[in-house]
Image (cartoon, rainbow, N blue to C red; front, side, top):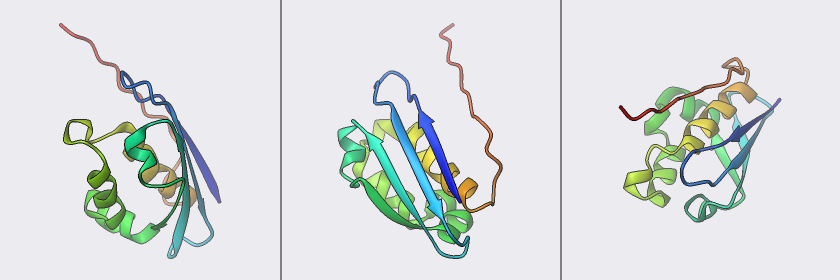
Length: 107
């Protein structure tokens, strides 16, 4: 199954598209990230991600740790990180596709 997440991350302006392909939820997901973000570009355009590692370990997963290594501390958590983990879960049939929306105001 395939899941696609289109991300408008906010003030950085680095819109991104995450695509996750999963054949078996116990295996790996093939993930591609299309982005102009120089930090995320350091991960490469295509990755193999352990589905169960993400499901069982979330922010402690090997993949999340790799992302944190390329992201400056002030940008963590990046919206693309959340989208990637969500896309893998949806593609694996372990989550339903539902948009997330955060609205910021300054008061």
